[in-house]
Length: 313
Ligand SMILES: NC(=O)c1ccc[n+]([C@@H]2O[C@H](COP(=O)([O-])OP(=O)(O)OC[C@H]3O[C@@H](n4cnc5c(N)ncnc54)[C@H](OP(=O)(O)O)[C@@H]3O)[C@@H](O)[C@H]2O)c1
Image 1 (cartoon, rainbow, N blue to C red):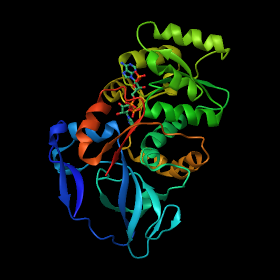
Image 2: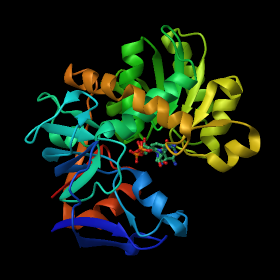
Image 3: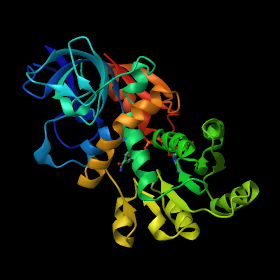
């Protein structure tokens, strides 16, 4: 028997339970992975809190890294032929907070030895979101962008992918995390009252002229108001302020949207390559044993985790 976190119904963290489950044998186009680390994202608890009752019970966890322990007939993974014992990462899956999981091979890639297990388990959800944000805002070499929440998981990935593209970044963070923003090549500014002027000052100081695009990884009114004051609406994207985006015609993207899924699937191989080359780090703030997932989620929900969290079975 395997162990897997299941949410019984929409609700808070008290609906999560670690449950004994039978792992199905992999069919054609599937592999079974012994999980070595499960990634953790705000989506894990947000999609339970705001989920459709028809989708429950729901196995939790969208990404993992681990070892292949069984391969279905006629099955290759994204990166090619696969065999038992191969080290892999998987995204976008469901049920990753587990000791073992059977998943579609189209969501599984080989893990290069250079990318640690806990980092790999947290690479692709934040990484592919960051890539799509840069893509839809059309950020290009020599431009300057404003990133709200630059010290967070998505923000840190935006910073590094922007550096690869030659895009300058002013990134908001709390004072305590300014070094994180600097470490990944951004110019930090503190969020809160007076943000717009601080961004203008930072851009002027760097000699960048103006802010060309804004990427909101926070979802506050402040983040959107300051963005709208600085950039054209078509060069703004949010991943967190869905209600206001809909009301005001601001672009919002999410993994549940078909176009986002297609884009994000398409960049996974490139993100793994960047990570292997050391150009895309995944800072891991904490690891928790699998049976402490609720404590880990509560810590993440505190909003200032200072890096990713990995669950280790
Ligand atoms: N739509 C999508 O496809 C998608 C995908 C991934 C994530 N998301 C969403 O995007 C958001 C960020 O995810 P994440 O994984 O990067 O989260 P995270 O690692 O927890 O980062 C949170 C960030 O928000 C900043 N922050 C916290 N309170 C703030 C405030 N009052 N004003 C401005 N900034 C504040 C934090 O800065 P300090 O810690 O420095 O204070 C940190 O940079 C979450 O809401 C998540 O659900 C959406």
